[in-house]
Amino acid sequence: MPDHLVFFIHGVGQQYETYGNIQHHVSTIQKNTQEMLEALYDGNTTAAEENDDHDRTASSSSSSSTTKIQVEFVVIEWHSIVHALVDAKMDQATLENVPKVRLATNQWLMDCMYYFSKPYGQFIIDAICRQCNTAYHDHGDPEHVHMIGFSLGGVAAYDILSMQWKNNSLDTTTTTTTTTNAPPTQQQQQQQQQQQHEPCMCATPNVCVPKLDFEVEHLFTCGSPIAAALIFRGFDYMHYRPPPHTRIHNIFHPYDPLGYRLETMAHPGLFADRLPVRLARAPPRHSRLRLLPRIPNLGIKDFITQYYMKLTYDEDTSSSSSDDDDDDDLDDEIPATTTKTIHDNDTCEHIVGKDKRTMCRQLVVVKEQNNNDNGQEVEEAEEEQQVEPKEFYPRRIDYMLNETVIDAYASEWIIAIKSHFRYWANRDLAFHIAKSLLEKKIKGPYTRSGYASQ
Image 1 (cartoon, helix red, strand yellow):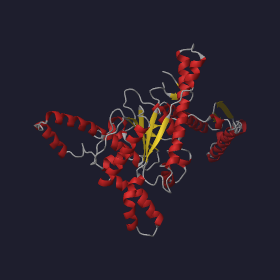
Image 2 (cartoon, rainbow, N blue to C red; image 1 turned 90 degrees about the vertical axis):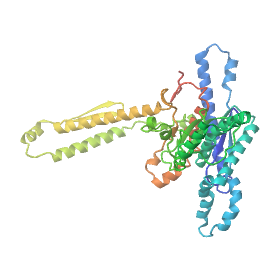
Image 3 (cartoon, rainbow, N blue to C red; image 1 turned 30 degrees about the horizontal axis):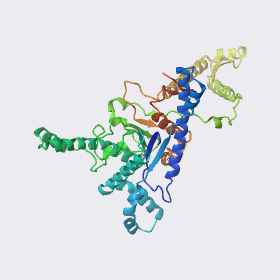
């Protein structure tokens, strides 16, 4: 029996068919998560053993270090089940020209329309819940259960978990009605009338969600437009959200066109002006880092800096006025250029001593550059410390992947399309999932040197 059971709910498009590759994606994210779990769990347990008790025997330490946490990912596939009902009719109605475009329309775009329609949306919800309950019992009813939803699968997982409140209330109401069999009171009739007059505040999907046989601890949604789905359906987050025991992780790439913030709907007064939490960097693979040679300091930066200062000095001297006779007389006595270079780590101050105005301008530029460098270092330190929120703030919901250097130079359309499919092999995402699964075992925030015990 695995320690953690994770249900993976896919998005639109083919999964096991010709253009589907879901098995490879799930195996990749499972492999990365398992590596992170082993690294975090082994490293933290050994550190805890050293801090708690130094007199433990070698046998006990070796047995604890070899302890592994097993995580099982189960694919919940609903695309083929729905399309088995509609593909025969859709193929007859589809035109023969531009076949690839029509294939993308029928297999990818139509999935969104099927989900948000009454008959097929109910069928998708039933298929997901049935597969989850069956897999849960087949794996021995594990204690910890989680869900990962990609794109439209995240919206479906959010709807299923949000409707679990209604299932619990229906269970309580059925027990009370069977015992009392009393007619509704006047207060209950007034509440029903208020709900009819305010459909947008307390609205829920017009589907019947089956009850799950387990409780979900973490819901990871990757590139899922949950906020957009709530808005265009007229739902409110405060009246339509998962139970309190389920923590939501709304993860998106900064350039993902289907990524939307959810904290602005959950806590608009607190997180409206705050940026999403940037995922912490995953520990590097030391085996790969050993192969990289160390680049020596060849003095290229100092040469470029001195050359740039010489060019700026020549421009200032050429643009100076010719009617300053005193300055022309002093040119014979004072050297043309007096340069003083002070090396402090990676910063250099160049003081040019012919013109006082030039000297002042260079000092101001150097001070502004130093202030900007210090500001960037402070911002980087704040991003590293932004792994976990403070105690007096609600738990964060929105998390953002780290962009790469190519993202700043690539085309807007290309990077938007590629960013929606960057979640599977992202090690930072696997690191975040591993930390969330072990949040009760590990102690202290993660730094580059490891986890600091509190």
